[in-house]
Length: 399
Image 1: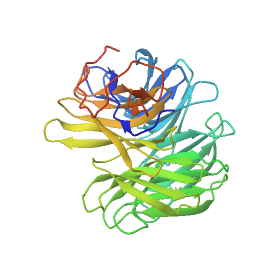
Image 2 (image 1 turned 45 degrees about the horizontal axis):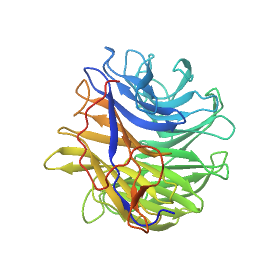
Image 3 (image 1 turned 60 degrees about the horizontal axis):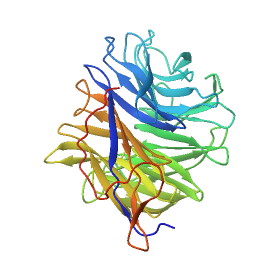
Image 4 (image 1 turned 180 degrees about the vertical axis):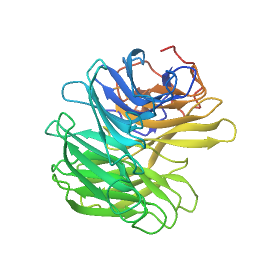
């Protein structure tokens, strides 16, 4: 058995995707035979479109799909569906809608559009958008985001349940007179739904991290806020055997804008929180060892803004952190654990063909100290690497 503390892994390869203009990835899912990324592209000559990129296990592009019209579209969340296709959500301004609308789009396994749905109010209203989608146990979808078309005022957190064809089954809004937004949603083991985001209507002041639980019909069961008098935002929630964990940003900590990890029980009661070095954290996943992998951002005087991977144990204690980037600015937007390490997606200005490109980085597993003093991986796949935190300056492989 491998025991002992983990050392930082290494970046094994980096891929950038895009053209001469701004392109980026906001969502990532690991697949059995590769990865799927969702984001945006401005390199197709139409201004901005929702963009999907499908790769193999080495990050080589298998296909990419561009979806949209004459306005601006963007994808913030992607999920593989039961038929091995993909569902994505984001926002759309095309199709004669005026302001942005929440957009739900379904594509086949090879990226062919099967259907799409635009959801929201009238053309004259102020706009709506989608931030997160999950596949539900009945084969349909749960979506969260925000709406200005319905609700109590300002932006309200919006939950929409659809069937397998994207037809709305129910729609619920949550919030008060100020801005409240859903950033992440999942179906809970009990059949209900959990959303995380931010609320300015409730809590201690400014924006607060917001965790909301509803039953299978969308009726609220409880909600909880976390934060202080300044702005705090929750970006992603994951369900654990005995509760939930959510990642976000806190400005209420005495050290300023920092990544924050909050752990709760099944009723949303806070058990602990941890604040880390770095800046806004956008993505979180539980790991096989019971800990967490987080992607955040760090500002460096020498290299500007870089992505930052943070690995913790089960109670949020830091095990290692790892900056990733080059001479210009990078954003890490999503991180996943793979069978043989980790993968991170985001936006890079240092590598690629244009001003910004979608970015995918493959990271090796950790090294561990064994009882005889030798080192070993937590997976047999891949080549042996040295431990230690690195500042990765990677050469792009052509997509």
